[in-house]
Length: 245
Length: 218
Image (cartoon, rainbow over all chains, first blue to last red; front, side):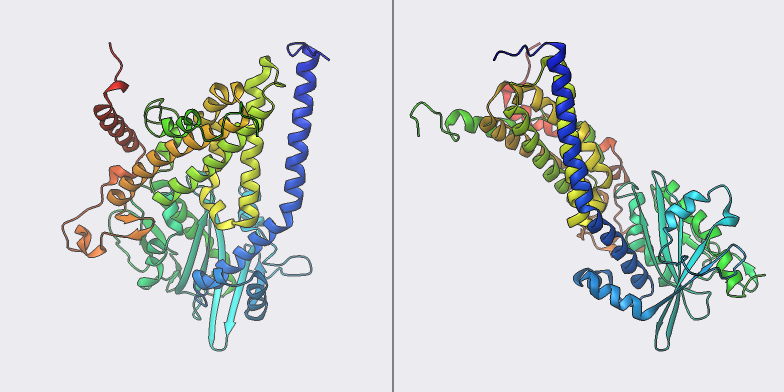
């Protein structure tokens, strides 16, 4: 049967069939792979928290099975959730792990006072770390991080940063060791006496080395984003820890 | 096997693979796919993974479009190609996210950008629509590798002079840097996109001075 390929009817039919086939293919694929992708995201979050706590190296965790990581996590991490005043609001249905820090940040962008602030406490015998997740804005998209404070609830003992779409080789360097090691290679503190100074990211030399980090050359906006995130991120926790009124 | 059937690896077909590597290179001769050559060549590894993704999408798109070339209505052929490429790119993205989460995170932005890579649309329009799937497959391989080697060369130069490393492995020791009392400093220009233009232009220059027939008479 000869079909006129240039008729409107044929064109429309072809377009409809093509879209249905492609759409069905993608919908099936997305549904089939969804659980796997979710598990990957949760697994990565657990890895970040354990790495920030200094308990494991990322390379070690990548070798492990997801179930193994999940087990370690359950054994060593306890959670809590605070409101902006540092009061614990953890209850049935509100778990720290269940809070997607980036989504929470976006949802409460205009009113940080209703934001929920999750916290993870790592305990391994005498070794106690308080891991604080936070999120902010980079150049192209969200950035986030997990910052571990030591027993004194003030000194930074480990950080992990990540980002959605910062420029590789520039802003993306916040997720690399060279930048993250700056937080632990010398002492960085959140509080100076009873004053909340937090940690800032600055250019052109450190004036207050306990509260400042060198910015990344060529990635000003991402660096500023990390700075802004750190400047405001610790406040509710300091209130919860009783270090700030 | 019928005797009239042309072998897939005949001389004519092998030309489909070889030409794009040099005489009709998609980047240096046709000057396509430049945007991605600028954006993702800061690190060699990114350049490589991007090239492999383009390889997959280009092969699949070329073969699919070529197999249904007699069914595609002329009036909407560009849209049809776009839908097929987009479907493939999203498929790559979903599969990467589920099975190699790490790699997918590195590629995040770039996977989507494959849709806009002119090489893919260019090959579909110029080759797949008029040829059988076999040759279209070879044409895709040739062009993808033509793209790959340029990206790798540019990525190599940018990474070693810009960050002092190759494939993420440090080559220039930190102790040589001026900030640590040495004499060396990384070239910041190498980290910025415009340098890729200079590098691609240099490749074009070298290639044409070696291969005189590529120079247009004017």
